[in-house]
Length: 451
Image 1 (cartoon, helix red, strand yellow):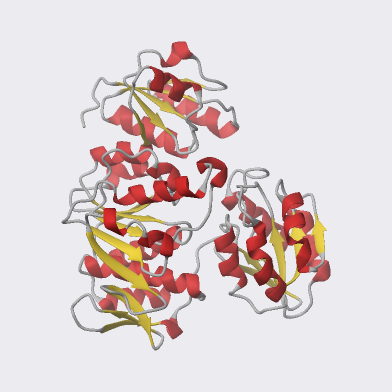
Image 2: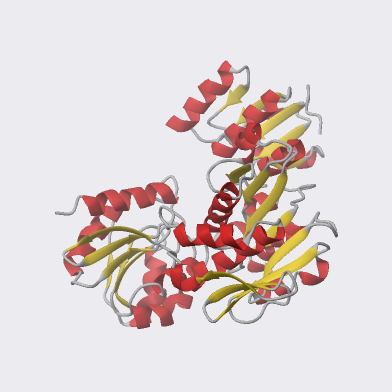
């Protein structure tokens, strides 16, 4: 795609919008940026871009500013009802996302990973595996480093390990990963996608442009994913925790086993894994399948699995104080992630901190697991009232608080030796924090400040 002298408007000046604007400038486009919000970070980015000769408006969208645009690049959180995108639709101007923009300019081989949960862990595992194998590798995307920002490091023979969300998949057109990995699908982001069917359709777009010489890696245990199979043109490979995979990797006698070569081959003994729990077993399986398909040896894969420790804000141990362990699982922004965390720690020993922005999920789904494993619930944020109502039948002590610091103080007062204080909110963070990382860092600071 040739963007030279093309009039392109980037909608949104978050991290991905900023990266898209810089990339467009680098390739000679006549880029400009429109942003409805005004924050310190946005104003800093505005100053930087204007010094590069890019026009920026903040605090609202003006039709006069976007008039004459030949293409819009929309940031993931920008809704179709925003003025620039309504203008684009009315005037039949193409709209793409930041991932689509970067992919049209990339010559590297893309391994794209999506799913409701586990994306960040799997792309991080793959990044370490490819480094150990001596490959040129770039890890980017929804993990916090936009594809557009990584372009300068993407060479012709690079592998691009890309975490991609449902928001980003909605705005692809020609995006075609060489390997596409879909980990799982559970109800999430229903505040954005309106309903679960719309969310599933967005996830299925991962395979939209793949050809018969591309590879698709799928969770054989996920019934929602199985409904996509007839439409996928790529070669299909599977991973399964519960049964022997048709063609791929699976678990047998606590070993990850591959049958990709036509015979069973041991890859890794899960007893040696640092990351525990059924969800992490599936993350190992998916990463192993992707690495094996591109020709990386079982020895390298197993070596990385043995050494890889948990990521920040993913059931991360923070501190043990008077026999009580504090765990930061701020990345758990949906019910499935919180369910996985609850199954990781001893039953009856968990003080659970829940709440944040309500994404339209049904908290009743947590009831059975909460009754079995949780001793107290602490609620905060916009969703607190609804969570309290939907979990009231669990007959557990429930305490509502106004801040995460207060939640930590209440948990400390309730905790007994052997307990686990688990921040696993099952909600997004945007009612009180910039993102899940800030939420997790506030939790960790409050824990470290306990005397």
